[in-house]
Image (cartoon, rainbow, N blue to C red; front, side, top):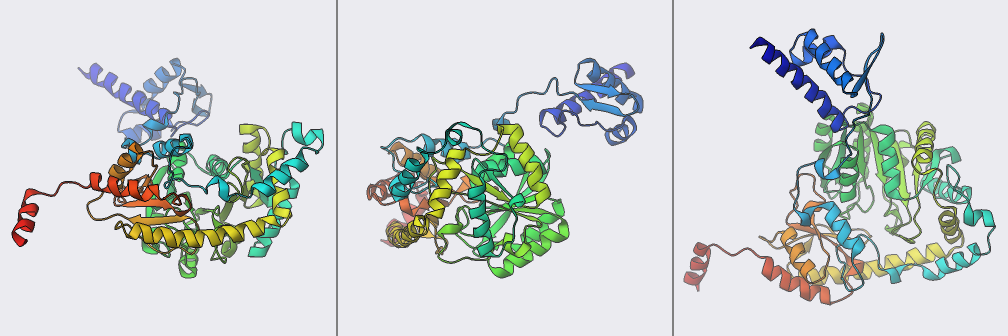
Length: 480
């Protein structure tokens, strides 16, 4: 009987090691705990650990190095499946589902839940002018790989923009990427290990969660307020030793809120005391009527990493992002970008964007967009209010309204009903780590110009309301 128990204990140890490898808590090249420490942790004898390690080595899962210990080989590492990285979710509140509906929708769909401006809002004349100029460029520009840090012309323009904000950065502190999403992915590759804790706002941009799940991070949500993250909750969350905090300071996605100076200083102070790094996504900054507090400006790129892109303001088809950070981090990110895609973003894309930014038309374009959005927000607020849908706050700019639905209405149910009528919504729990935003939805005011949306929304809301209990109906009848 004792032999059976010993075998069971050995099998349990082997399963524990395999599980850590499967969920990326241990990756190729990682050293396993010493025999003595693992025995103490698991409450078994050292000989049981030796037996488990020997059997795992025989399977090729680990390899012994004389005088050094046991290391993961990676030979039997299973493929990574995002679907297995968290608790299952309903399809209509799954970030991947929402992304697929938005990206794959054809021209017959209405898109009040998507995250970009309509095509006819973009500066097509300036883009076409830039493309004509590129058609006469040197052959090398049209054929060669991008340099490791990206085109110097665009980096110089970005450095000037940073200087206008009060960030004194050098060319060595700036890296161009293929997109803002890739910028976050590279940062996660550099700074995170599987199992690390990362703070995000609750609610937050749903793709932050998707990326962090891909990197096997432990996601902790911090309640978001109209002036930024709840400072008390943020400070409390720091006790969990998070590695990163990812946020939007200006025109927060999805709420449209902007961090206050007081909150910004308190967040920076708490993060610095903990030694935590902050990733500040500034993709919506140019939609603000005037600059608001920025964590990267207050910090000076010491513990704050600034990222941004031009997908929202210029073109999602000509994609390019950037990272501004400490030089040692940028050096590491350059190597990662070379390893994962061999060079920086497309020279055609970077030269086209640089041409538009340098030509003077970009400033005029953004002035016009901000004015259109002001009118669109007012119109959308009034039309949504007529349906009982009310914004959580009035944003300073941008194209998002984070709205509370009438009592009893679940935004996931509403989204499913609207999809039947070819209308894509963004239900609240897609953005919520704690899944407490079922009564909210994010609306893109620039995508509400087609009045059919409100008619479809009105009918879908009627169909989505849960039936009232019989007692409530009887009470209403008696009152009448």
